Image (cartoon, rainbow, N blue to C red):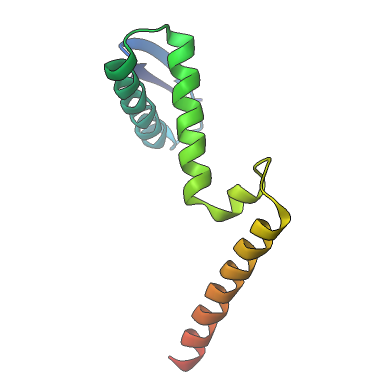
Length: 103
């Protein structure tokens, strides 16, 4: 199992991954490092654990905001909102299917 060396907030970490996943792991680590760097510039060095936790929460929030299906799993997502999301997704799928049939 390959090991990748990454750096987050200037701290080095050795992470094992599956063969062939090394570059993807480096890309993801770069995304986390970027988010932590932005937090540090706004808040200062408030502790590695807190910075990583805040970065994880911000990235999770960003993911659920850009992924309507993930938004369904959020606590507080009411039924009407969930139904609207599913109806919207179904309409988009039907539109794509119709365009493919006519192509």
